[in-house]
Image 1 (cartoon, rainbow over the protein chains, first blue to last red):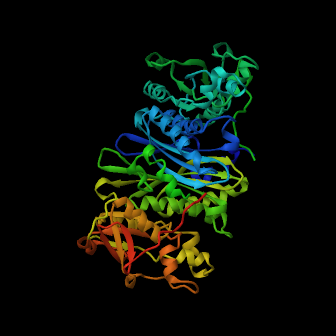
Image 2: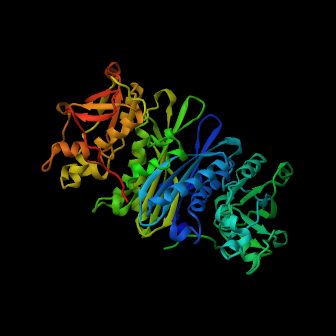
Image 3: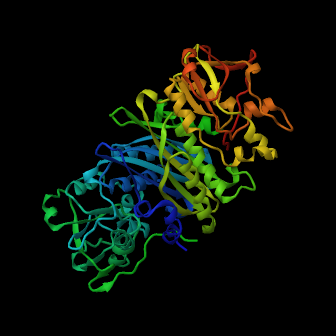
Amino acid sequence: MDDRSLLDSIRHLIGEDETADDCAGFDLSDGRILVSSTDMLHETTDFPKGMTEFEKGWMSAAVTLSDIASCGAQPIQLLVAVGLDDPARLVPFMEGAVACAESVGAKVAGGDIDSHTELTVVTTGFGIVERSCCCRRTGASPGDLVCITGTPGLAMAALEGDERYRKNLLTPVPQVKAGQKIARAKASSMMDISDGLAISLYDMAQASGVGFVLDSKNFNLPDVCSGSAREYYLYGGGDFGLLFCIPPACLSALDTDYTVIGTVVSEKGVWCDGDPVEKRGYAHSW
Amino acid sequence: MDDRSLLDSIRHLIGEDETADDCAGFDLSDGRILVSSTDMLHETTDFPKGMTEFEKGWMSAAVTLSDIASCGAQPIQLLVAVGLDDPARLVPFMEGAVACAESVGAKVAGGDIDSHTELTVVTTGFGIVERSCCCRRTGASPGDLVCITGTPGLAMAALEGDERYRKNLLTPVPQVKAGQKIARAKASSMMDISDGLAISLYDMAQASGVGFVLDSKNFNLPDVCSGSAREYYLYGGGDFGLLFCIPPACLSALDTDYTVIGTVVSEKGVWCDGDPVEKRGYAHSW
């Protein structure tokens, strides 16, 4: 069983809307939406070997701030709950978390400190966005273009030893400014691709009730030393680019770098060059 | 080393104000404050043996909602990040968390599901309060009365086997309505006493830069079968009453049950019947 099927088991408790997105939304009743997101990371499954404490802190902040960014929101605060096997790890870890938050204009505003057998971190972020610009995974419509920012696969290449992309893997940068520009350009849906491009496409397709038709000729494949660039591109996790859908007419107003990789169709599923894309990516399993 | 001294090591990173309180505050610039709080709990250290999954979910929600309540705020949303050793635990656990949140008018709006060697939970809640009514640990002034709601010690009595107080220990009720009434009555400071009354008094005294003089004649000691009622009262953790300070003139407007246990003085420290109170309570240690 993986975390996506487990989530299905509690949809009736939390609500369909609330479980369709990595971010929760709360209407502040003044034209603004408060968005929030929470992520658990722990040593054995989430931090590549050799990471410094600073990098672990940075990454813990980044995964949550990236979710906030994918709503088109400005992150404002981050809370960091950390379970420590060794208290000496706290200061460099928090320095990393604070540096990442400050790099996108947010503030680490509190948290909790616990003892634990294994370094375990939960970051929770809050952001604010105008209601008219709030993007979710839902909303993609047939005829929209499917676009991404960044180059998927670089983090996985680094994980496989390509030192050129070490920063992509270890200190990923949440795409806050790009997310805001994409949201203001009236994208119909948006999410980050930190679990991998293919699984993210499936997540968004399911949330929006649509399908995606990709054309591999348009893929901005990564320059990799070994392995399959296409495998890294579609199935590598750990990249913090944004996946978004947008009506073609809105694209001219979008002042950020992006790649158009396909189009939205009404039939549910994800295809590339006519063939179904394999539905896999990063997932926890039991 | 305990978590309080460890927190001291990162005050320079997070800020004095941000680390003085269990809740972070964000000014929404429209007369309202967004307050938020996060808490990590895990199986071996935080859940008494024999608890059901429902009770663990309830308690996880309650610890955070109690912090929101202690600001005088209305809890709005709760995010629940849960690391599971066994996925079958998720549904009854979340039923407990949802029931607790709904009991105080809040909604579980999202979360994260992870695999972990040990049940590990981080609940993050946020609430909203009018700026003029937002209570913190800071603000207690000499001459204020020191008051509590509820009867400290009942949860510890239950932990020691007193079945009469089982619910106090396992499904504690966040004091949301009382918190709001106390805040509107213009209390100068407030926090919950979930780590124990004595350590909470020291925490509030430190945050406010004052001292407390208690009179044990006024203690509403718990009715316990064994052990020292005074020990339970001052040092038992797990009760979710509120500790607050308030100018004497404001007390007549307060429409909730409370007990006056002492007065605020300018000299820093906590005394009872003239003797220093021992500074101990619930703390994580390494």
